[in-house]
Length: 84
Image 1: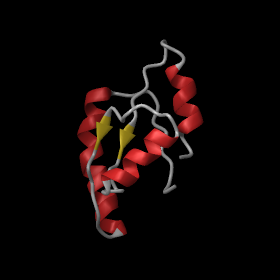
Image 2 (image 1 turned 90 degrees about the vertical axis):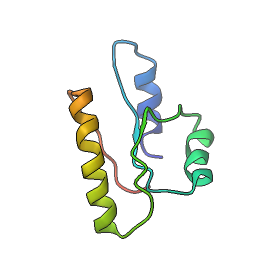
Image 3 (image 1 turned 180 degrees about the vertical axis):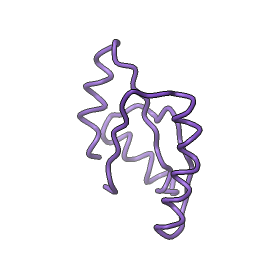
Image 4 (image 1 turned 45 degrees about the vertical axis):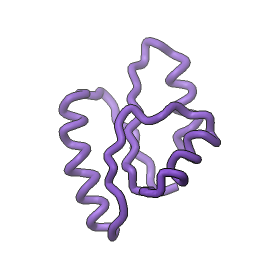
């Protein structure tokens, strides 16, 4: 996962309040869980649980489900990566 080094580094700095949000597009729990386990990453703070579907469907669901999360968290910065 492209974000692994950045997540690990941010977690080392208590002054950085970072949240890990997982889209849940890899709806196979074994597959998604393995990414986090193999990279020694914490469980996501939020899972959007988007599941399977076409690209347009998944993109739309991510946007709909992410909006209230960002509204609650009010982040100063958002880092987004494409499919790994």
